Image (cartoon, rainbow, N blue to C red; front, side, top):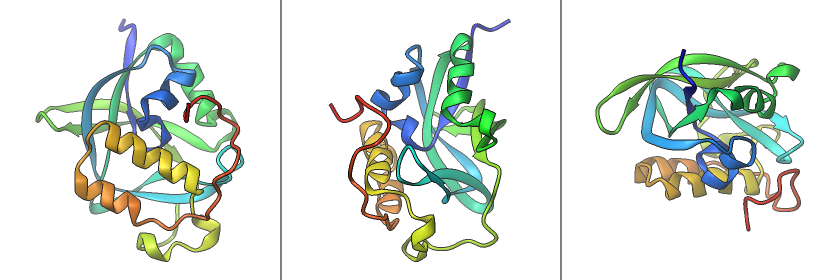
Length: 174
């Protein structure tokens, strides 16, 4: 039995400082994409004071992110961080296409509620916008790992709710 698992992070866990808060064994393996899904913001997160990211099935779209290899002992920590116990997200396995041409199976988290329709990032209503601080964490993580520049521009095109105050997570901006 494997002592590690592969996890695809497309949200705040793209940032190394963030993933290491609850998952100190995480080691970056790849940059990759999840095909036929899109990034969206739906459910308000008290921790971030705005909506958190999720993935939504959507043909012809792709979500960029980081593949982390994590010790299996940290899986309960990751599940707790993602709110699996509160039915905020559920875990599932998906195929990620890495930038070096491999297709690998990874654990990913998706919110239980999905939007009825696609809205361009600039048209997200205020109740579906991430906070500035959360969106900035995604963008910092994407830049840190040199994710596709067009995808970074896409992340930067999302409207945010302007919140840039205190959050329930310490240590990611030190």
